[in-house]
Length: 140
Image: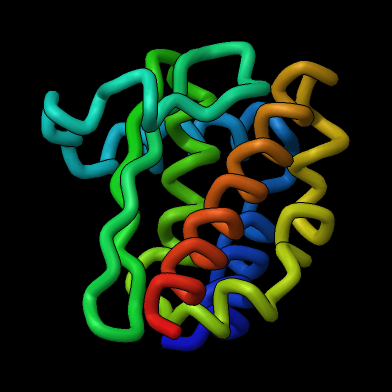
């Protein structure tokens, strides 16, 4: 699936819930379904700066695609990073760099987060893009 298609799918899923309590429960469930990250990736180098809770993000390039793995010590944050991985993992570098995260605004996520969590969300997206830039430079 393309990033655009995945974002549309997420928007449709969140539109099924009428209130944010249910949406947060869904977000928590998404976090619980996140694959376990190898302990070797839970290093200071993989910590995302700017997050209130600890979030580890690891990336590996596989030809033209980037595979992301992540974990967090907070359940809502883990759900947020699970959403971002669903959108960006296993996508090609240019698609990652060229795509806006419109689904975040369309599902109303950022406006329902505390300011520190909203900043953390932006830091996660920024780090994903930084990895994509680094792999693009490395491939050229």
